[in-house]
Amino acid sequence: MNTLHNKAIFPVILIAFLLLVAGCTRTERAKYAIVFNTDLSGPITKSDETKWRKTISTAIDSISGYFGFEYKDTLRVYVVEKRYGNAFYGRLYMTPEEFNNPADVIMQVTEGILAPRSSIVHNKGLTIIMVKTFADTANHTYGSEQSVVDYISKLVGFSYLLTLTSEPEGELSTPAYVVRAQIFSFYLFLERTYIRENFRTLYHSASMDYKHGFGKDLAELEQDWKEYLLGLRN
Image 1 (cartoon, rainbow, N blue to C red):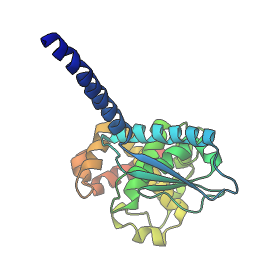
Image 2: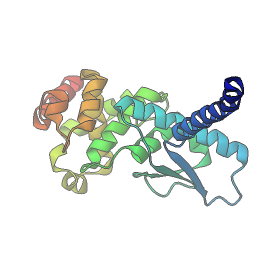
Image 3: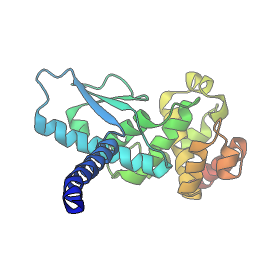
């Protein structure tokens, strides 16, 4: 009798175990969703969508792993003929060609999954760190060291050097290319000076607490950065 009872229970236990494993797998795969929309003249092919989805997923996993958080929301990817908007939380715009450029992918996905912050300086800065870390920047000016060197004279000699704490007012009165160069050079300076754990601490800090992340407040870090720029120019 016990033998028959055990034989009857075993399949039930096995099925329950398989359902549990399947449920765990679905939960793991469903930690975030990627939804494609398009304004292309023709539909997205299944092979392209599969390839692009893998590209975006890899970028999400790399960036979230760097900062130590789990992205759980829906990321809407708009595939467009010509990019007409910047990425923001939960949404990004990319042309088919940009999926083949690692720097473009990392830039868009970083801005699409990082939690919204009070200052665009911060998210733009973290974006350039991600490009430098995860993408080949040899032919991409946003992430290259040369882009900083090219603007050294403008950064140091400009009559109004952007004070990062006063953005966005500074951006309104400063040419956009100077603002970008300042943000990128400042964060590349931090990347050369500090380690990943500092950026992770900063990302998770309340109200962008630079002192908590780097041991110095923003004004002190800016002064270090300006001295670094002057040293490069000299």
